[in-house]
Length: 453
Image (tube, rainbow, N blue to C red):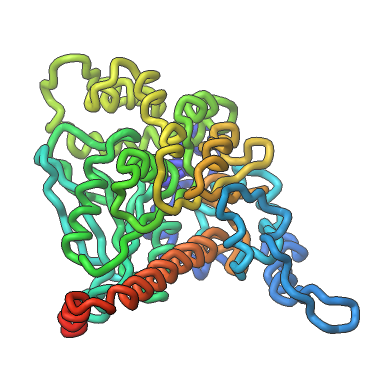
């Protein structure tokens, strides 16, 4: 779920007595005043969660001496993949996964709670617009001032939000701030029309289209040739990212990637989207899509062929929007053809760089990215892939960890530890290679030039 306001509106349609929706700006501006009131309606036992977690004793031998941490992450997590052993050194994975009380009892409660109440970190961004080969445009949001304070070889992290999401989403901001605090250069890739990015052609984006991402990565590598570049994607952004990795295979220029809440199998995700309360998310995302579309409706005026513009403009479901517009724009013969040929589950086997996937599962806990769509066998078979599955979480929720319930998702510290591990591996490898190459006179000359930059 990528647009909390749309979910709130869709919920109101199903529940006439719901309170009026708050705008994102007014809600987050008053978040500090709202949080204490919300805490007051939660049971006292639930509110002791953070204190209990913080004061929990370290494992003891019974004599008062602390014992060595368990060799693998806590048993509350499902871990799979050839490189799972590296997680044993992650401090963020030694404690059990403790979902915030009350919220963890229902996946929808956790999903919507996170969307409504997660804090929005303040940061000043600088926007850069790139023109695509088809004359379309995407917007890159950088942290303002980083060019002046970060070294040219600082690692770069590209963030890919979910469907209709952008740099103003809370889960994106929290990850941005965490990476930035570690000295990373961070940029949010806003797809066409998202986060008020410009739309200059009658074409948005899709789960299958990796062209814009490929251009963005090339642009960043060209600007920061001394930096290692990584990417993290959520939901649909994760699907696009993993598809890109599979297409690039061993030619992928990224140094590592993270996939969060990836629907993986879009056919399965579409099936579950129409079940029970999941209709709320379907309506919400459809409303978000049509809102973006209507801002740029004149660009689509008079399109011929199989386009069904009225259906897209008035879509009540994501499937309606995709049938009327998306699948036609990207050359698919039907919406089912689009979903079956745009799933990133088919790309896992071709991924050739380190990839961490984090999902939820508890009776198909994630209402938008069902557990049965996770390509577990392919992840286990690929030496580059690693999977962590949590027992609760909702969708883009993960209301757990030290900062619950209003702070960053539980995943953020794990993602950052993983990326820093990869960066340290890269640094060590580079130093070793440089030391070895230094034997030759040509290499010594190269090192001298490099040292002067």
